Image (cartoon, rainbow, N blue to C red; front, side, top):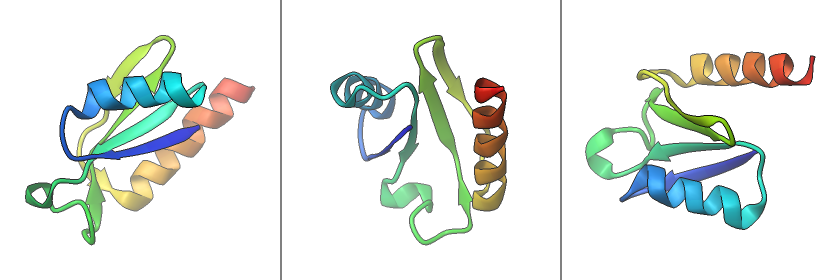
Amino acid sequence: MGFAAETDDVIANAIAKRARKGCDWILANDVRPATGIMGGTENAVTLITAEGVESWPRMSKTEVAKRLARRVAEALA
């Protein structure tokens, strides 16, 4: 699992980072100041796997963590 905080070309940069780092999954987010993500209580992320790209809606950072934990548990089951 990798993480990519990006300021431009979020998906393309995260896909490249996933390949470069050899991660099975990478969770990317757009951290440009205009998004309000950094220092805020919400996040909007994109999960990138070998199977594809899945954009999640904006939600609380706690909900992002819960959703990610569920996805990891499902993948390991």
